[in-house]
Amino acid sequence: MPTVLTDVFRGHPIHLPHTHQPDFTSLSELPDSYTWTSKDDPLFTAPPSPPGAGESIPLIDLNHPDAANQIGRACRTWGAFQIANHGVPLELLQDIEFLTGSLFQLPVQRKLKAARSDAGFSGYGVARISSFFNKKMWSEGFTITGSPLNDFRKLWPQLHLNYCDIVEQYEEQMQKLASKLMWLSLNSLGVIANSVAKLNSAEVLELLNSLLPILQSRGAVLACAVPWIKCLLLTHSSGIMSQESSLLALNSMYQLIESRVSTLHTAVEVSSCLDLIVDDLDEEEEEEEDAGPVIYEDKDRDEEEGGGTEEAMETDEEADESADGVNHFEDFDDMSD
Image (cartoon, rainbow, N blue to C red):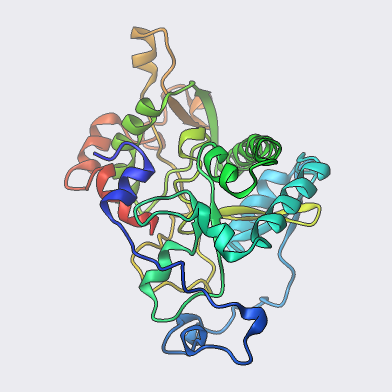
């Protein structure tokens, strides 16, 4: 079973040429390889926008006492929302934007010194999904997993330590914000966090191996604040990006935006009822002093004190039955593309 994301990509290499990128500043006309038509891009034939599409994307103040319900409503109706009072220092946002601009303004040949390998995940290159289209995408990217030290040293021999420090601070802030947004989203569904233990990477993979089949069988995607899997869904439908002094949060917890069309099988429409994550761990806690890795509990459960069995979450026995016949985590890797 793959233990890290790079193992998944190593087993599914995609050959994307980097060395023949044109210099768009000197071109007199657009190359045919970059000219997209309705045959090349499914967005050309996207369905009409839903009623109210002309309205602004909701702006949610995270300090508002009703922020959780506002997020839930935005997820169900829009699939996206903007946030204010996110807690990320403006100076840090300016630093990361400066770093991003500095990186992509480098000459192509210099950026290629940190080019992503065919089977790799980190480094400079185009999106891995590019290989599924006949035309070349109008984009370039730089993926960071873990420390960017090796790649940054190739790009900025004198400044790489300073730039690595900016990325480290930004990643720390994004983890905190992503965790906060996740708990607010779960709270809007009537789910509260009972306890979260500190996990290492092996424990997270073991947790995923048992939870993913259950969630997939219900058409759901795992939402977890554990740092080891913060990028699990990033490549196919979720993300957080800076927009001036606010952050725009795209999510796949409730629904996909109707205009987000995909020709692949990787897009997952998530059930609006996330009523199952882990259940019946109370008995295990009595046997072991350590808390379970990730425990969620329905809000009404404490009030009923075991009386509402029909309302309770699925038991371990039922969870095992749901997992029968469903592929394990190693079969989930194709969703990352």
